[in-house]
Image (cartoon, rainbow, N blue to C red; front, side, top):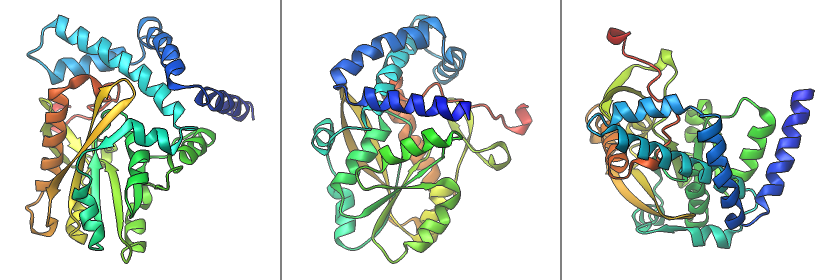
Length: 293
């Protein structure tokens, strides 16, 4: 009961903050950076290790600069996500520009469904909300529910404001099957970490052996739906551009793991070109191959 009460107090505070303009929230983000990085050192060890292992050729000075830039962006990202609770459709469209959306709307015009994937890069939450306003098909976004039900409900209501439907990961196949006669887009964050018992396939990603989920590839091959990758780039504070890339036109004709490799190669290039805006605080490499344990 006490935990639930604190949760609702926290949610009320988030709702209040979301009513403030982003320019004001970015002032809070400045202090948030000091708290996250300077005072508490939130997952600083994780971030430092991830950066060091991913970029072995960078100097200590370069890595520290990347680390600080990431934490500053993380603080901004937190308050941008809080703002989503009250953001208007007009502001969404202003802040996210899609450069070649015709690549996916052409499929919808023909009544074809697609699969889309991206990584935890840039403000993926903002991107998915803005996308819901732009496409004629229903967008189903696969997500991992939070353990705190009160906050999970808050995020769910926020994320579905623009018409997207959020589906828990464990219900993905059921949702795909139940909508097979509709024109849809299923969206996946392909860089999530499998639970240890499901870490069956490994790739070399950012200079490290990395376990990957194969769900996108398996569904793509079974349904033969084209696979699209979304690349979301920060243009300036609070403003983003999204490019769409075709990963596979006919997945049923691809070789095993070809789609998975292609999506991770795309994400790797995006990160290498502009490193600070990936979620480096995620414990992406907490599992090790058995021969390295």
